[in-house]
Length: 288
Image 1 (cartoon, rainbow, N blue to C red):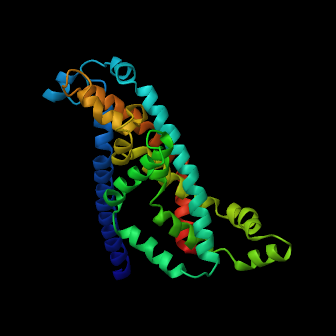
Image 2: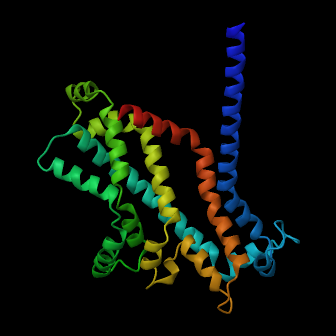
Image 3: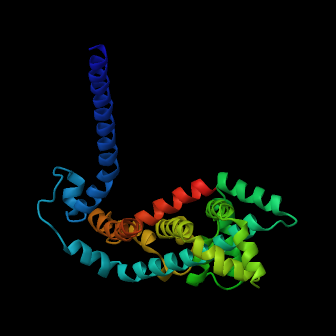
């Protein structure tokens, strides 16, 4: 009887803890999704509705806000810029991080500890404000500051975290595979291309997602690099400038329409690549 009472007591206690957990999770979900929901709903309101803030839902659904965002602010062009920059940064980051992670995990060379120390320092110190001006001056000296290539190069840097992710994952791959490939006549490049690269797809998916997200959401670097050439502005810069697109007045409904469009690609990427993202992180954590 005592054991049955104890079990009932424990189950009731467990139910109470479970209920608290669900309430906490529901609150966190609501807290996370509210800004997105507010942005999407606000994009269909008038500016007067937004400033008054009397209704959560739009009184009338103004789909023309999206048309104005594309036509008045040349949003299609800036969206294309963001797509080009994000995919280019993603590709370059995946290649450079996989190469750096492979070499740091598999080879010993003079200065390796120094490089690892520098990478480690870049993980804990924000160097954006320090390096942004030198990078811009370097691109200007090379006469590349008025090209989209300069923005791609600037955003591809600062991949220390991704390099460590790839390095940790690579250390978990047995070195016997490298040795077997070398015996079969593979060079160091062959080992990388034929052995390690195919096995590193999960962690490279994580690197690609991180790089795409950072490039897509970047504001300060894109703004600085596009000062001399406004046509190089990306989506995030254009969204902020939509506030003052008409008569120097804050057009919040147009800005929210632009922000809603900017949210869509990130949501789509995470929805379709969610499994690969989680698999890459977990496998990297276990093998690292």
